[in-house]
Image (cartoon, rainbow, N blue to C red; front, side, top):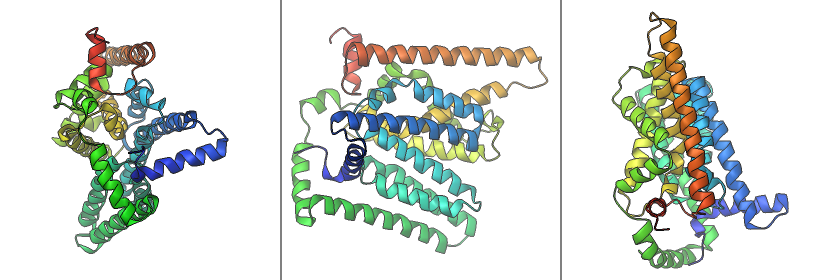
Length: 352
């Protein structure tokens, strides 16, 4: 089977447009598209942090993403994963704006649906954020109105976005018959092979080991913050600046945990499959750092908070330096070509 699959037509359309605009028709155009998507996701994550959580949470989240060995590894490849990261962060931003319920809520909801429609033609994993987002928006409308008309309207709009994406995919395949033939071929092409069995399969330890090797601090703090937010524990997360930061953290936590649960249970595994939650995890981790520092009572000597800020700064800078060195070690020195955990463990064990 030829790659990429026709159901990823949206990504190929972006590459084609980029080639037409730049005049460069090489694989480097796809790589630059990934780099631009990575930069866009970093900027958008910072904006979400500033507006929905806390300015410093946004700054820290941008730092985590900017030095992430995982994202740096993807930003230099002509793959769909960093584009998916940007689209997912865009859906998160629209969702949080719609959840605020102000005059921009309806426009933000329409923005979410537009991004969702396109994301469904970029990579099939977009079904998870799209499904969670549509369900979440419908729930918000049900809570707001107390009736079923508004949430049913949201569900209908989400179904319409899905149908439009499906129509594009059918057209890209050349019709229903060609799509059926492609489906039969894809079942054969995606059957477990030696690479999948050796490098893209395993239990939950596959991802936990990958996080530990590549970027332990943000993922440890991010998942801890997600669990904390889901438990609805106000301390210390209530210390963030934005008035609705708690609701935003809960939404990010639900998304990160749900996406992780599906990915962890899916037979085929790869760290790049998690690119749609790199940004949300970074935001959750940054929020926990800021909240932890601000949890120190003001009544205490000012020196106590200054020490906490200095400790957090040293921790963040040390983590950033370690992440950059990690990227250079695995992806520059050893030229690892995929974000498959066994590649990194083999390097550490001296088998590569």
